[in-house]
Figure 1 (cartoon, rainbow, N blue to C red):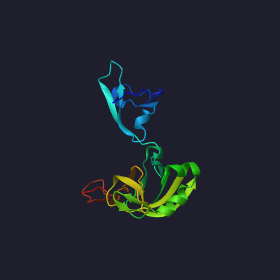
Figure 2 (figure 1 turned 45 degrees about the vertical axis):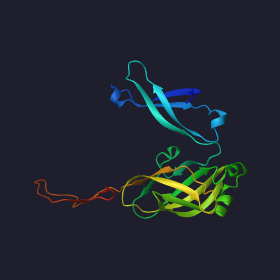
Figure 3 (figure 1 turned 180 degrees about the vertical axis):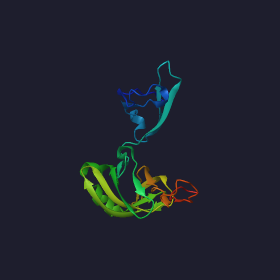
Figure 4 (figure 1 turned 90 degrees about the vertical axis):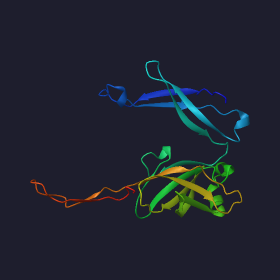
Length: 213
Protein backbone atom coordinates (compact mmCIF):
# COMPACT_ATOMS: atom_id res chain seq x y z
CA UNK A 1 0.00 0.00 0.00
CA UNK A 2 0.86 3.66 -0.12
CA UNK A 3 3.21 5.18 2.46
CA UNK A 4 1.84 8.39 4.01
CA UNK A 5 3.97 10.88 5.97
CA UNK A 6 2.45 12.69 9.00
CA UNK A 7 2.19 16.46 8.55
CA UNK A 8 3.56 17.28 12.01
CA UNK A 9 4.76 15.53 15.16
CA UNK A 10 5.29 16.53 18.79
CA UNK A 11 6.94 14.44 21.50
CA UNK A 12 6.09 14.92 25.18
CA UNK A 13 8.02 13.37 28.05
CA UNK A 14 5.80 12.30 30.96
CA UNK A 15 8.29 10.56 33.25
CA UNK A 16 10.08 12.50 35.98
CA UNK A 17 13.76 12.88 36.86
CA UNK A 18 13.51 9.92 39.24
CA UNK A 19 13.24 7.65 36.20
CA UNK A 20 16.77 6.55 35.27
CA UNK A 21 16.09 3.53 33.06
CA UNK A 22 14.11 2.66 29.95
CA UNK A 23 11.63 0.51 31.88
CA UNK A 24 9.98 3.56 33.53
CA UNK A 25 10.03 6.02 30.63
CA UNK A 26 6.76 7.25 29.18
CA UNK A 27 6.31 9.46 26.12
CA UNK A 28 3.35 10.75 24.10
CA UNK A 29 3.87 11.30 20.39
CA UNK A 30 1.28 13.49 18.67
CA UNK A 31 0.98 13.59 14.90
CA UNK A 32 -1.42 14.79 12.23
CA UNK A 33 -2.14 12.12 9.63
CA UNK A 34 -2.59 13.01 5.97
CA UNK A 35 -5.71 12.18 3.99
CA UNK A 36 -6.04 8.96 2.08
CA UNK A 37 -5.78 9.14 -1.71
CA UNK A 38 -9.08 10.41 -3.15
CA UNK A 39 -9.98 7.02 -4.63
CA UNK A 40 -9.81 5.33 -1.22
CA UNK A 41 -11.67 7.86 0.93
CA UNK A 42 -15.17 6.51 0.38
CA UNK A 43 -14.16 3.00 1.42
CA UNK A 44 -11.68 3.79 4.18
CA UNK A 45 -8.67 1.57 4.85
CA UNK A 46 -6.71 -0.30 7.49
CA UNK A 47 -3.26 1.13 8.12
CA UNK A 48 -0.15 0.58 10.22
CA UNK A 49 1.60 3.45 11.98
CA UNK A 50 5.31 2.63 12.10
CA UNK A 51 7.60 4.38 14.57
CA UNK A 52 11.31 4.09 13.87
CA UNK A 53 13.18 4.56 17.12
CA UNK A 54 16.62 6.14 17.61
CA UNK A 55 19.52 3.88 16.76
CA UNK A 56 20.43 3.15 20.40
CA UNK A 57 16.99 1.62 20.99
CA UNK A 58 15.99 -1.72 19.50
CA UNK A 59 13.91 -2.19 16.30
CA UNK A 60 10.74 -0.25 15.47
CA UNK A 61 7.18 -0.15 16.76
CA UNK A 62 4.02 -0.74 14.73
CA UNK A 63 0.48 0.33 15.75
CA UNK A 64 -2.75 -0.59 13.96
CA UNK A 65 -4.97 2.27 12.79
CA UNK A 66 -8.18 2.47 10.75
CA UNK A 67 -9.15 5.27 8.37
CA UNK A 68 -12.95 5.47 8.53
CA UNK A 69 -14.88 6.08 5.30
CA UNK A 70 -15.56 9.75 4.65
CA UNK A 71 -18.93 10.64 6.13
CA UNK A 72 -19.08 7.52 8.32
CA UNK A 73 -20.61 7.84 11.80
CA UNK A 74 -18.18 7.95 14.69
CA UNK A 75 -18.34 7.84 18.49
CA UNK A 76 -16.58 11.01 19.66
CA UNK A 77 -16.57 10.20 23.38
CA UNK A 78 -18.31 8.50 26.27
CA UNK A 79 -19.03 9.95 29.70
CA UNK A 80 -18.41 9.19 32.50
CA UNK A 81 -14.90 7.87 32.13
CA UNK A 82 -11.31 8.56 33.04
CA UNK A 83 -10.33 8.90 29.37
CA UNK A 84 -13.48 9.94 27.42
CA UNK A 85 -11.46 11.20 24.30
CA UNK A 86 -10.07 7.66 23.96
CA UNK A 87 -13.56 6.18 23.95
CA UNK A 88 -13.79 4.51 27.35
CA UNK A 89 -16.25 4.84 30.23
CA UNK A 90 -16.87 3.11 33.49
CA UNK A 91 -20.00 1.71 35.12
CA UNK A 92 -20.78 -0.27 38.23
CA UNK A 93 -21.29 -4.01 38.02
CA UNK A 94 -24.73 -3.86 39.63
CA UNK A 95 -27.60 -1.50 38.94
CA UNK A 96 -27.89 0.74 35.91
CA UNK A 97 -25.21 3.36 35.27
CA UNK A 98 -26.11 6.32 33.07
CA UNK A 99 -23.77 6.79 30.14
CA UNK A 100 -23.69 9.68 27.67
CA UNK A 101 -22.54 8.80 24.16
CA UNK A 102 -21.52 11.61 21.82
CA UNK A 103 -21.80 10.69 18.13
CA UNK A 104 -21.03 12.55 14.95
CA UNK A 105 -22.67 11.91 11.56
CA UNK A 106 -25.21 9.53 13.12
CA UNK A 107 -27.63 8.43 11.79
CA UNK A 108 -26.62 10.32 8.61
CA UNK A 109 -23.65 12.36 7.45
CA UNK A 110 -25.87 15.34 6.62
CA UNK A 111 -27.44 15.55 10.07
CA UNK A 112 -24.23 16.87 11.67
CA UNK A 113 -24.17 19.73 9.18
CA UNK A 114 -27.88 20.50 9.48
CA UNK A 115 -27.94 19.76 13.25
CA UNK A 116 -30.88 17.38 12.84
CA UNK A 117 -29.29 14.18 14.23
CA UNK A 118 -31.54 13.97 17.31
CA UNK A 119 -34.77 14.22 15.30
CA UNK A 120 -33.50 11.76 12.67
CA UNK A 121 -32.39 9.29 15.35
CA UNK A 122 -35.76 9.52 17.09
CA UNK A 123 -37.51 8.70 13.81
CA UNK A 124 -35.10 5.90 12.92
CA UNK A 125 -35.05 4.28 16.35
CA UNK A 126 -31.81 3.63 18.21
CA UNK A 127 -30.55 0.57 20.07
CA UNK A 128 -27.35 0.39 22.11
CA UNK A 129 -25.77 -2.91 23.08
CA UNK A 130 -23.13 -3.56 25.73
CA UNK A 131 -21.33 -6.77 24.72
CA UNK A 132 -24.53 -7.76 22.90
CA UNK A 133 -26.84 -6.94 25.83
CA UNK A 134 -29.26 -4.09 25.09
CA UNK A 135 -29.05 -0.97 27.21
CA UNK A 136 -31.96 1.42 27.75
CA UNK A 137 -32.14 4.67 25.76
CA UNK A 138 -33.14 7.33 28.31
CA UNK A 139 -33.11 10.24 25.91
CA UNK A 140 -31.33 11.99 23.06
CA UNK A 141 -30.49 15.59 22.26
CA UNK A 142 -28.58 17.74 19.80
CA UNK A 143 -25.37 19.50 20.86
CA UNK A 144 -24.15 21.41 17.85
CA UNK A 145 -23.04 18.84 15.27
CA UNK A 146 -23.20 16.00 17.81
CA UNK A 147 -25.96 13.61 18.80
CA UNK A 148 -25.97 12.99 22.56
CA UNK A 149 -27.49 9.69 23.71
CA UNK A 150 -28.32 9.08 27.36
CA UNK A 151 -28.17 5.35 28.08
CA UNK A 152 -28.66 3.10 31.07
CA UNK A 153 -25.99 0.41 30.94
CA UNK A 154 -27.19 -3.09 31.82
CA UNK A 155 -25.63 -4.68 34.92
CA UNK A 156 -22.72 -7.07 34.49
CA UNK A 157 -21.33 -9.77 36.74
CA UNK A 158 -17.75 -9.47 35.45
CA UNK A 159 -15.45 -6.46 35.43
CA UNK A 160 -13.57 -5.43 32.28
CA UNK A 161 -13.90 -3.81 28.86
CA UNK A 162 -16.85 -4.57 26.59
CA UNK A 163 -17.88 -3.28 23.16
CA UNK A 164 -20.61 -0.64 23.12
CA UNK A 165 -22.39 -0.53 19.75
CA UNK A 166 -25.07 1.93 18.63
CA UNK A 167 -27.28 1.27 15.62
CA UNK A 168 -30.64 2.24 14.14
CA UNK A 169 -33.64 -0.07 14.18
CA UNK A 170 -36.02 1.40 11.59
CA UNK A 171 -33.75 2.34 8.71
CA UNK A 172 -33.36 -0.26 5.96
CA UNK A 173 -29.61 0.27 5.95
CA UNK A 174 -29.37 -0.31 9.75
CA UNK A 175 -26.76 2.41 10.27
CA UNK A 176 -24.07 1.44 12.80
CA UNK A 177 -21.48 3.51 14.58
CA UNK A 178 -18.07 1.90 15.15
CA UNK A 179 -17.90 0.14 18.53
CA UNK A 180 -16.46 1.99 21.50
CA UNK A 181 -15.07 0.48 24.71
CA UNK A 182 -17.06 0.60 27.94
CA UNK A 183 -15.45 -0.53 31.19
CA UNK A 184 -17.29 -2.25 33.99
CA UNK A 185 -15.33 -1.55 37.18
CA UNK A 186 -15.28 -3.92 40.13
CA UNK A 187 -16.19 -2.59 43.58
CA UNK A 188 -13.61 -2.91 46.33
CA UNK A 189 -13.56 -6.30 48.06
CA UNK A 190 -15.31 -6.53 51.42
CA UNK A 191 -13.36 -7.93 54.40
CA UNK A 192 -15.02 -9.41 57.48
CA UNK A 193 -14.03 -8.96 60.25
CA UNK A 194 -11.97 -5.82 59.65
CA UNK A 195 -9.68 -6.37 62.65
CA UNK A 196 -8.19 -9.20 64.65
CA UNK A 197 -5.69 -10.19 67.28
CA UNK A 198 -2.03 -9.36 66.80
CA UNK A 199 -1.33 -12.91 68.01
CA UNK A 200 -2.79 -14.26 64.74
CA UNK A 201 -5.29 -17.10 64.18
CA UNK A 202 -8.08 -14.66 63.14
CA UNK A 203 -10.19 -16.18 60.36
CA UNK A 204 -10.96 -13.50 57.71
CA UNK A 205 -13.44 -13.72 54.83
CA UNK A 206 -12.89 -11.62 51.70
CA UNK A 207 -15.90 -11.20 49.38
CA UNK A 208 -15.15 -9.94 45.85
CA UNK A 209 -17.45 -9.16 42.93
CA UNK A 210 -16.44 -9.07 39.28
CA UNK A 211 -13.35 -11.27 39.38
CA UNK A 212 -14.86 -13.69 36.86
CA UNK A 213 -14.47 -17.45 37.09
